[in-house]
Structures are given as C-alpha cells and as structure tokens.
Image 1 (tube, rainbow, N blue to C red):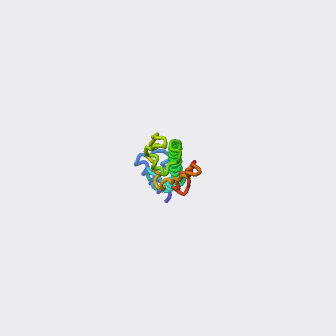
Image 2: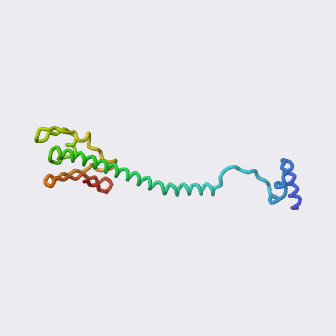
Image 3: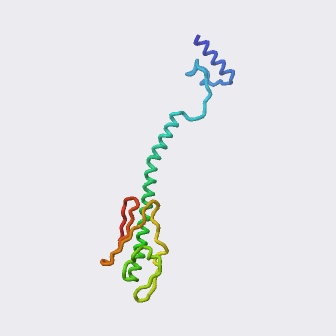
Length: 157
C-alpha cells in the first residue's frame, strides 16, 4: 500500500514537471506537497513586537529625562539673565529693584541719570512651572531669584 501511495506522489510530481530528486521520494514521500508561502510566522512577529517593546521601555524614560533637563536648563539660563539685569540695575540705582517687572522700564537714579530697560521682558518660566520668585534684601544688598517648577529649587546667586 505504501508503494502505491509513493507512486501516486511521483506521478503527481511528473505531471507538474517537478523532476528533481528532492521532489521525487525523499523525506516528503507519502505527503502532499504544499507550495512555499511568503510571510512571517507568529513567533517571528511576537519576537519583533517584544524587541520593539523593550526598546520603547528604554527610550521613553530617557526622552522624559531629556525634557526635564531642558526645562531646568531654561530656568537656569533665565535666572542667570535676570540676575545679570538685577546687578546692572543695582549698580545704576544703588539698590536692588523692588520687583522683576522694574527691569523692563527706564529708571532715573538720584544723580538724574537714566538707564534701562535692563531686559526687554521678564522671561516666562518653562511650561508647567510656577512663576519665578524674586526677593530683595536692601539691608544686606542681596537678592534671590528662584523657581520651584517641578519641586527642584534653583536659587541664584
């Protein structure tokens, strides 16, 4: 009976024009021959999805850190610019400005000399952060500019 099935498979191959030794007999003897199908197996697709998941699990937190560091760097740059403007204002007026908004106007000191504006505008804080806090101590001739945007306080000078 097995010989009869083998002959029938050989006959099918010969009808199709498959005359290679690999197609006649061999390990596929007794089975019907399917054509090769193009595509990916489920295992291959699952492996690719797993690799993409691992890479995104690594990349997303790194991207969030980059954004946080950029906001902190912006706040530090803004505070340095405001501190520089306050220092120039203080040198001209012999007193620190009462508020950051005073840096954007023209002022006249006791000698009648005008100066300013010391900044075109007070820079806005990074998105999602609270406004910059400013405090001046005229007794000690010091000032503080700070930001508490994401619970990290940056104080200068």
